[in-house]
Figure 1 (cartoon, rainbow, N blue to C red):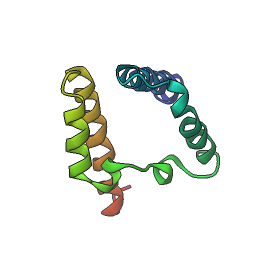
Figure 2: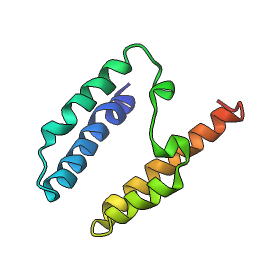
Figure 3: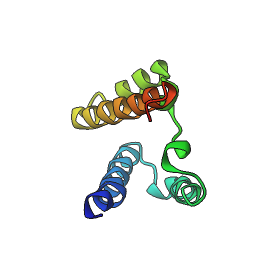
Figure 4: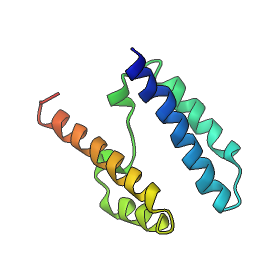
Length: 101
Protein backbone atom coordinates (compact mmCIF):
# COMPACT_ATOMS: atom_id res chain seq x y z
CA UNK A 1 0.00 0.00 0.00
CA UNK A 2 2.74 2.45 0.94
CA UNK A 3 4.66 1.79 -2.27
CA UNK A 4 1.55 2.47 -4.35
CA UNK A 5 0.96 5.65 -2.32
CA UNK A 6 4.48 6.84 -3.12
CA UNK A 7 3.69 6.57 -6.84
CA UNK A 8 0.29 8.29 -6.70
CA UNK A 9 1.24 10.98 -4.19
CA UNK A 10 4.96 11.62 -3.73
CA UNK A 11 5.92 11.13 -7.36
CA UNK A 12 2.92 13.09 -8.63
CA UNK A 13 3.80 15.93 -6.28
CA UNK A 14 7.36 15.86 -7.66
CA UNK A 15 5.91 16.21 -11.16
CA UNK A 16 3.91 19.23 -9.94
CA UNK A 17 7.21 20.72 -8.76
CA UNK A 18 8.80 20.11 -12.16
CA UNK A 19 5.77 21.64 -13.89
CA UNK A 20 5.98 24.67 -11.59
CA UNK A 21 9.68 25.06 -12.43
CA UNK A 22 8.99 24.89 -16.18
CA UNK A 23 6.25 27.50 -15.85
CA UNK A 24 8.41 29.70 -13.64
CA UNK A 25 11.11 29.76 -16.34
CA UNK A 26 8.46 31.11 -18.75
CA UNK A 27 7.17 33.58 -16.13
CA UNK A 28 3.84 31.75 -15.90
CA UNK A 29 1.92 30.96 -12.72
CA UNK A 30 1.38 27.39 -11.49
CA UNK A 31 -2.29 28.28 -10.94
CA UNK A 32 -2.71 27.86 -14.72
CA UNK A 33 -2.34 24.09 -14.23
CA UNK A 34 -4.79 23.75 -11.34
CA UNK A 35 -7.90 23.25 -13.52
CA UNK A 36 -6.11 20.43 -15.37
CA UNK A 37 -4.96 18.89 -12.09
CA UNK A 38 -8.52 19.07 -10.76
CA UNK A 39 -9.95 17.55 -13.96
CA UNK A 40 -7.43 14.70 -13.80
CA UNK A 41 -8.27 13.96 -10.16
CA UNK A 42 -11.99 13.98 -10.98
CA UNK A 43 -11.56 11.73 -14.02
CA UNK A 44 -9.88 9.03 -11.96
CA UNK A 45 -13.04 8.81 -9.84
CA UNK A 46 -14.93 7.24 -12.76
CA UNK A 47 -12.21 5.78 -15.02
CA UNK A 48 -9.47 3.29 -14.30
CA UNK A 49 -5.99 4.85 -14.52
CA UNK A 50 -5.13 3.19 -17.81
CA UNK A 51 -8.27 4.51 -19.53
CA UNK A 52 -7.70 7.98 -18.08
CA UNK A 53 -4.22 8.21 -19.65
CA UNK A 54 -3.92 10.73 -22.47
CA UNK A 55 -1.10 12.53 -24.22
CA UNK A 56 1.62 12.15 -26.81
CA UNK A 57 3.16 9.03 -25.24
CA UNK A 58 -0.12 7.13 -25.40
CA UNK A 59 -0.61 8.23 -29.03
CA UNK A 60 3.08 7.67 -29.85
CA UNK A 61 3.17 11.20 -31.27
CA UNK A 62 6.89 11.40 -31.94
CA UNK A 63 6.73 14.95 -33.34
CA UNK A 64 5.33 16.35 -30.09
CA UNK A 65 7.58 14.16 -27.96
CA UNK A 66 10.68 15.37 -29.81
CA UNK A 67 9.52 19.00 -29.69
CA UNK A 68 8.94 18.79 -25.96
CA UNK A 69 12.30 17.14 -25.38
CA UNK A 70 13.91 20.04 -27.27
CA UNK A 71 12.08 22.48 -24.98
CA UNK A 72 13.91 20.81 -22.09
CA UNK A 73 17.36 21.22 -23.67
CA UNK A 74 18.60 23.23 -20.70
CA UNK A 75 17.22 20.74 -18.14
CA UNK A 76 18.78 17.35 -18.91
CA UNK A 77 17.46 15.87 -15.65
CA UNK A 78 13.91 16.70 -16.78
CA UNK A 79 14.66 15.24 -20.23
CA UNK A 80 15.63 11.94 -18.57
CA UNK A 81 12.42 11.84 -16.53
CA UNK A 82 10.32 12.83 -19.55
CA UNK A 83 11.94 10.17 -21.73
CA UNK A 84 11.66 7.43 -19.11
CA UNK A 85 8.01 8.10 -18.26
CA UNK A 86 7.09 8.55 -21.94
CA UNK A 87 8.62 5.17 -22.74
CA UNK A 88 6.84 3.56 -19.79
CA UNK A 89 3.45 4.92 -20.93
CA UNK A 90 4.13 3.81 -24.51
CA UNK A 91 5.17 0.30 -23.43
CA UNK A 92 2.03 -0.13 -21.29
CA UNK A 93 -0.08 1.01 -24.23
CA UNK A 94 1.65 -1.51 -26.51
CA UNK A 95 1.05 -4.34 -24.02
CA UNK A 96 -2.61 -3.36 -23.78
CA UNK A 97 -3.00 -3.13 -27.57
CA UNK A 98 -1.51 -6.62 -27.95
CA UNK A 99 -3.75 -8.12 -25.24
CA UNK A 100 -0.93 -8.55 -22.75
CA UNK A 101 -2.60 -6.48 -20.02
